[in-house]
Structure formats: C-alpha cells, structure tokens
Length: 363
Image (tube, rainbow, N blue to C red):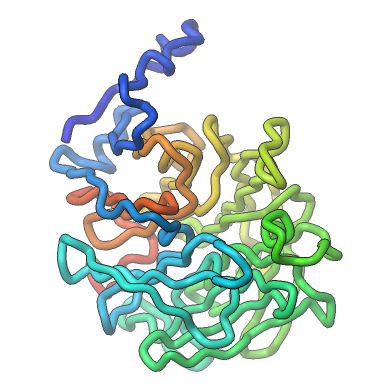
C-alpha cells in the first residue's frame, strides 16, 4: 500500500491544503497512510497493508483491546448503547487473518471502558511470562459504582479491586495501565458516564490516580484536567503521557483541551514537571500507546496520530472518522472506530507491551 506524503511547508501557507487531500467519496470512511515526516516510513515500512476488517450495525469496537494469550484474542469494549443493553466485550481472534469475533460479558463488570493486562500481586510480570488476567475501568451506572475490576477471561471470574477513593465515589473511570515493575495500577477518572446519561452528577475533581493492589494504598498523582482520558508509560518508564479530552463533553467544546501532557515519573510512584506534549488537530486524543522506540500513538478524530518523543507529528493512519482506541499485536496495529475495525499489517513498529504480553520479540 502506498503512503501519501504530506507537505507541511505547503500547508503552512495554504489554508485549504488539507481539504484538497480529501477524496471525492470522503463521506465513506476508508483507511490510508499519511506521512508528515520521513521517519514515518521507518515505523510503517514499505510492505504495510491497511484494510477494513469489520463494518457492523452496532458499535462493537470502542475501547480497551486487551490481549489474552490462552485464546490468542483481543478483548475490546463496545460503546455504550443503553441501560437495558450494557457494554459488551468483543473478543477478536488473532488465529486467522479474517479475525472472527464474538460478543460476551463478564460478571460484576457493568460498563467496561479502558483496560490492560494485569499481573496480580505475587505473580511475575516480566517479559518471560504471559498475562494471567485483565483489569478494566468499569464506568458504573446508576446502580453500580465506578471501579477497577480484575477479570480472568479464561474462567469467566472477576472481582473488584478498587471501588472508591477512601470512601468517595469515582465519577467514571476511563483508562488504566499497570506499571510493569511495581505492579501499581495508574488510572484516569472522567465524566463520560455522566455525559452519556448513565452516571449521576460527579462529586470528584478530574484526577489521575495510582493504586497499589497489594496494600490498598491509593493516591492522587495529577489534577488540573478538564477530562483526563488515555494514559501511557514511555518504554523506559520515565515519562507518563496523559490525554485531556475536555473538547468532548455533552457535545463538542472546541476551545477546551484536545491535548496530551507529559510528566516525569518520580521514584516510580509520583509525577512532576507537567508540560504540553502534543495537541490533536482533528478531534481529540483518546487512547494512547507507545512503541518500543518511544513514539507516542493516539486515537484521534480521523484515525491514529503518531508523534516522536519530541512531539513532532510523524504521520497518521487515516480512517476518516473518530477512533477511540487501538491495539498493537506483533507486526500489526488494530484501529477501533466503534462500528468498524481496521488493521495495518506488516508494520515495523512494535508496541511497548507486545513483548511482555505476547511473549515474542523479547531481547
């Protein structure tokens, strides 16, 4: 598949430059690769193949995208439909390039959103093991608290890990990452359950937290957000990236943040030195992941945006519609845009967590 080269010099002086790139049938979503910088080719390679995998009448591909080694599948949270039909988990098999799927639900998990592989206290969580469990952000509803829930997808068992901040209820937990050395869970709390009318009015500030599953210690590590959303560690674990999607609340708020902030991780437990890393020119940066070279990938309003560690935009995997999250697998990346699932295969980039979770490519 060819890669389109974007001229930032042309765009700098021509306000209509990007509109001229739109195909005649731009109302129909289609996947393409767009290079904003020469380094994009080093990430994607010249043998990449991009295609649409599924196009469904319901929004099966929304958030999470957590790997399970035993059935070689990705577990993707669907989008919210109604209180009568709570959020499903879409299980996509990687055994075939057709990527067959089915839908399921886990007990005690009402409204799943972001998730990550989970190594419980006492288990090994290094590159020689494979993920034994998942942990999901449960947004909650009017009857269930918003909480962190650990799930064993192989036994269909689950248990709550954290249901409040010292007795004060969360608003609508959004995304979570486990620190691969300490085992701590870092997560964001936003208001999207309230905005979608299945959670009560919030009573907590918009904050980012760190939770120790083995001790119960929970701390606020960052505040000052409009709507904290995706978060991700750099491959050296020295930086935490957090997106603020305040530009999407009850509706679009174009003057509010569509921003990724970077923080220094201090002593593996605290954050310092907040600075602006990148701003998404289309939509807002939802799910965030890093590759092993430290490049930052984010799901945005027209697909995936990729920045180098200095915050320079390298390119886009353009699908022409909002992407909420994505997932790396060995040699490929899957893009979630609600009713559609896309894949780019034969890429050079490898996700930060692929080695540990898939047990491949480890050095």
